[in-house]
Amino acid sequence: QAHYLGQIWDTGKVFDNSYDRRTPLVIQLSQGTIIDGWRYALAGRKVGSRVELSVPPTWGYGTQGNAQAGIKGTDTLVFVVDLLNTFNSKSSAQGKAVPQNNADLPKVGTNTDGAAPSITVPEAAAPKDLVAEYVIEGDGPVVKAENTVLVQYKGVLWDDGKEFDSTYQRDALTSFSLQQVVKGWSQGLTGKKVGSRVLIVVPPSLGYGDNPPPDSGIKKDSTLVFSVDILAAM
Image (cartoon, rainbow, N blue to C red; front, side, top):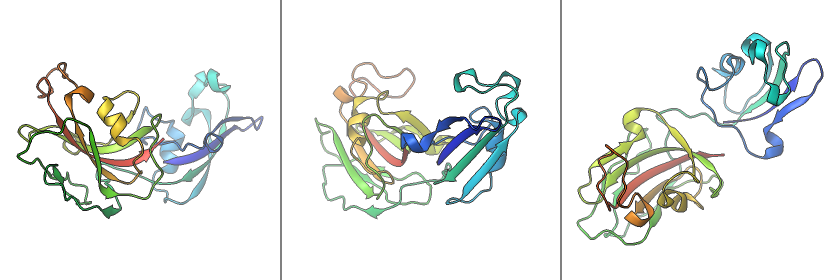
């Protein structure tokens, strides 16, 4: 997660600036997701650092440049990058555990060691309405409805507690726009703080209803239970 400003060496033209947008970039330092100059220059740097990068075309946008940004195939690029945070597949929520006193709701583990938390579903009727409660309350900014979030999560079925999806099993974080997920996720995460772990119980009307994804293991009209660690919002 970084704030940055990018300029063209020859002209000094600023072609990108996250500071003015007030939204830091969250991106994976892997081939194909960011220019090689960032991959090589930022790997191994410490969070809290400001790094200056001078990136020749070979490690930037190559001979084709980037017409949309006004970058020619011969342009050397200069970046200033402020490293705000780093994440990996073992990242988890960090904050204060919140008491889980409602016996009619699932209990979620509060471990922050990068392992998947437990989810224990009670022998009770599933709630008819959306539930979104802190398990661990972080101290980051509040998530907005238009944000994209970086998360760890685990999902189980209310009926039998069976896990149907998990970033922990894939050993990889995921990010998504809150405008492109089921309503239970977008409504449940909006207003929650970055750094938190949230229990979300999604009734069928705010989940997949009678049209669950093929081969997902989710039956029609299933109530879904998620533990979601909100690592970043952008």
